[in-house]
Length: 503
Image (cartoon, rainbow, N blue to C red; front, top):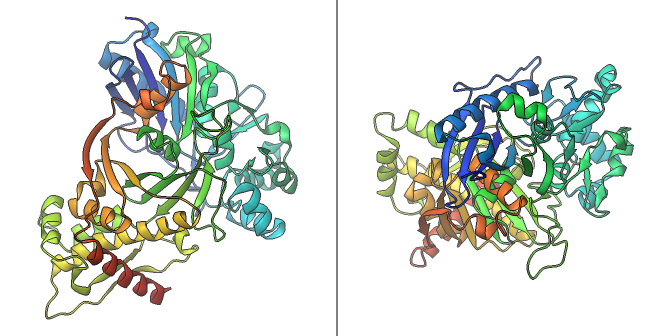
């Protein structure tokens, strides 16, 4: 049957992933990523990180070729295309839509002084009130760096864009972007509901460099004849959705409404929650962006309902768990390590781990406090206590950041996550539910499949997100324990006392 599949791309730092979702069943029928080894990042100086946008295109072609072959799909079978992408990168193209320089990607820190200077000169009240964040090390500051340090490049720029915008441009021959994307780059003024002209004026950036704005969901452009010939797709296939990786991860877990949370706990951990009114943290310990459904007409809501994504990042998450496994329990599996930790009572008999050993933490106002272990008694504590305390420390750091979200007005009732990484640990899940008081739901999904379903919403194949994700497979539900609630809260309170002493 023609038009039976939705195609999703996920432009990551290490690879580009492609997935095909069958429209009728909502199931992902094929998925592939390329390259199979981690894609290169160029660092010409300390703190720099660049990737060639052409590499993303080449990798997308290979991933697409593999999924089409796996599903035995034809060009006519693709009904719509959606795109997820690594956030905060800068791509500059000329009038021929050719990249002028490598992309300055999310983990490049060269623009930090430019953002800090803008925050100081423009003032915290103006930046936070309009951008909801400090200009920081985001895309606008990276463009300011190019303007000052590479004026010959800046003079040739026709449009600036994010990595997902670039892939959409290569597919369609049209340069455009979204409000969600502009907000993650610090190009969007939430108070004026328009491009942040005051920040552009401060940096001396011409407004014409900002691409035309299209909805996150909707027919943004269509596959060009040139791209169709190169990729083996059908010319005219709609590109109907775009979202940064964290907003898209939330979409993939059907996190669209105020109070809902999407969490990941890989090497670092991210908690991404939806806020129903404009708000920000005065200390910039979390970042606030437009969610993918910000400004959409929602049932029972105003025609332009507010949906903001509040993003908390904890650097020392899975990396601490891996360090613990490697250095404390190297001879057993992760599952056995989790069983060992479960033998110890809640609170680890007074052992506390401060888990911030992977660089400066934004939630601690960019302090670098390191990882430290407290309360060890040589006569009663064992490696089991250290293992449990490490996992509890990770959970407590999540909850510490979630308190900032609650101070912004977010009522956290439910946490959605994929059953992967730290969420494979029953101890981790039970502790997070116990301390936060939120129900945890675990699902089987990924970013490329979520982008594919986003395209189904944007192309009106699905009525809304509820229909698109009706077949999302729920693998487990963890309810907060009322029996152990007091013990969890006492352990968390003691951990916070220790953290405050460290700070």
